[in-house]
Length: 135
Image (cartoon, rainbow, N blue to C red; front, side):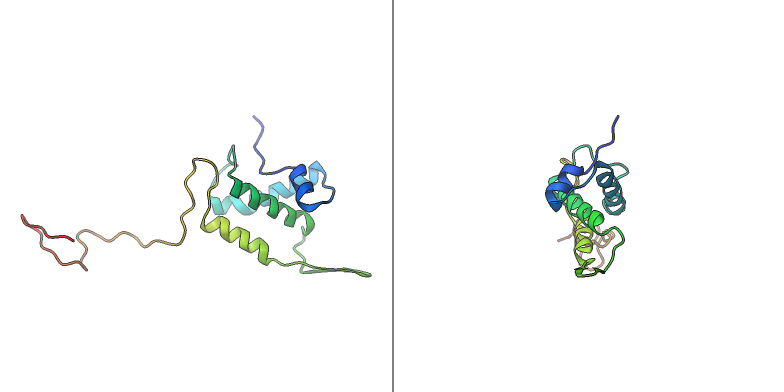
């Protein structure tokens, strides 16, 4: 059974407006899956990625393809390019803190939640017995 991919060369060509070979897109997709997998806590790529996951993957794929060495700056004669890791980090933060990974999959919880209080909650007044009062 072929493995599902998050994007292919056609998606990167449309996103980047430059030529991308199937091999280059495949490597970029592997890199992106390596970035996303620990954050979304899935062993395998979803059969049908959500629009959110797909859009994160395509944009991250463009970043991985255009700047595979994660350079901050590139200069060659009169050509000068600056790169920023901020956008990649923003996308990875979104993937880690919220969003739907696949249709029907639970959303990743936003924020952090403390453990539940033990019962009865000592901060709430009340008595235990036949006439228990808990509010």
